[in-house]
Length: 172
Image (cartoon, rainbow, N blue to C red; front, side, top):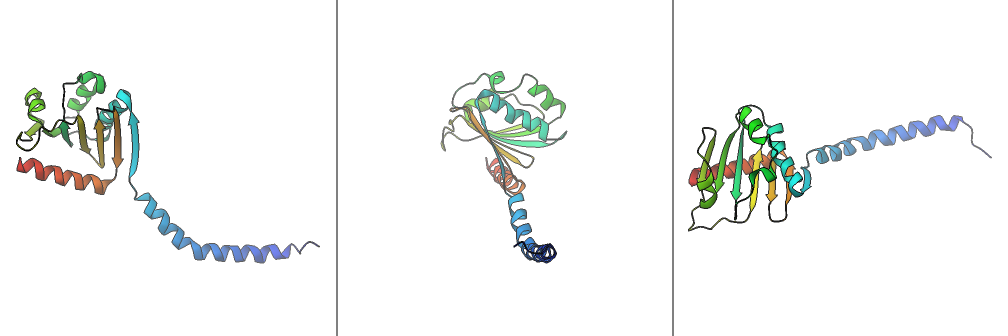
């Protein structure tokens, strides 16, 4: 035999009480997940282009980004960046600090908005064909060997990496 519909009301009150008890713990768990890094994996030259486009999109006029560039061989610049990347970067007057190897450092022209430091040969040839970029609240890693890239969005990790970069830049 079916129970009286009046039982639904007491059942609903009981469920509401259970939800109210569980809600604080659920909100705490939810907040923890919101603070987790957001990670994007990208493939091929189009994926690498997205990293450089993201720099220009993320940063505001006059902002700064930091780059470790460990080229092992010359690359066709336009192959990995959008045709208008340099123009958009320069329009925003983005300042760049670069740590690289001697070979790549010699290829870099000195510009007002770019400072370059060279890793000494005595330490390492620094030729891994990997680039790390630190910009805004993001860090990107580009592996030109496998033509893959990863962008990690997390303000704490980005600040940590930026401070390590600045320390090394100052010591070189």
